[in-house]
Image 1: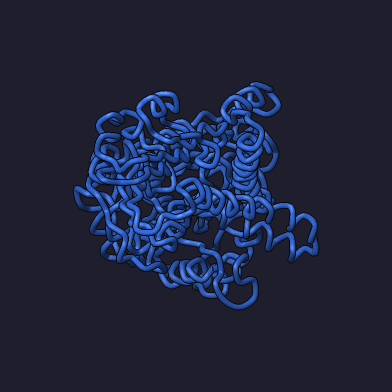
Image 2: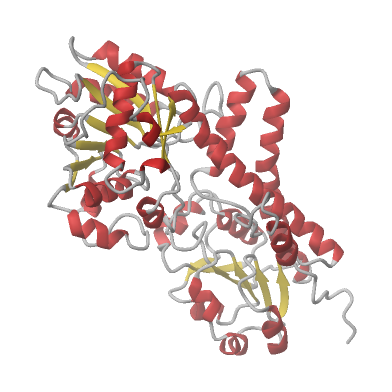
Length: 489
């Protein structure tokens, strides 16, 4: 890698290209496209149009209720929407008028045919490429003689090559393309901060004069607010792989600490203490060493599966098996937590009310994709529990869609944590929402059935306070404070 500060003084271009001052288009108005384009519009003053074929989603971006929840995003969108940030379903017009086109469409795991269950499904990507081609008429906007197409979503290595082929073979003569990789490194819940002060912006392009000029043009957009030394440039294949590896490393840390949480429970050690002391080693670091009921979100599992498929395709079965184990451990943690709930409650939760606090995969987001809550609630419903769910940002319709594979006659959704806990036999904390840390635990205990259980999957509640109130507490990765098999009456 080299920084853009280095880039401007190397011999890779005959002359440094002018800073980009044209229009920008983004195909895809989801979790990546919407926030990223809002920040670019705010920081650069350039005209940015986000397009999507989903009319309902575009209507939401143009309304007072955005389709996604991110702290601080609402204020940014409202500051620039209608001025230099626009949301539209007119893909052709937006693509024609912009020389830089970001593509931030969904790349789900393939559910059919070769690579089923591992490979990325690039149907939407190819569709985006064909849409770009159709919009490139004689008067289409160009920059340095080409359209710059930017991969923003996470994609398999060599996707840029495939997109270049589709674009080139379907566009009119005289229209050239440079396809860049500019992966996002956003964490849901902190996306606005991550966009405002990114620790790095990675841009990959072809190792040609035209490719390097395209990289520099895109870098000039970010240079409006990102320090030059944090804008890293490389070839397109390294950029594509870096995103997969970054997510794989983060998920690996979570699965590692979750595996150790089981060891702590078996030995009397405290996972929070162990993780803190291990993380104090500078070579390890403290981030992503918080145990929980399993990782979720749209990226980690999908990207690891993508990496596994890449390794298998390259005939590296041992490497593929290594990364697959990260996912297996994550699945085990979700199953283990659900099993502990049943076993601790006298091996039956049949017709018992269980209050589930949190359904999003993490705090400060309404995203439920691959949330551990789905599997854990599924376990509780399969065991015939009366499951009452509360999440401050996830609506009932979304919860019902996510749990559609289960019998939902015993599932309900509450409007507050106190409503969910009333009359419950147990509380299960799945998402680390801040409001759960300040609940009136005494009030909740008085309203619950006895004995009253707490299963803290995030270790956000004070175990000593809970025990003093009379709760039977199980905190993940902590020494057991109570076991009905050993209690003497």
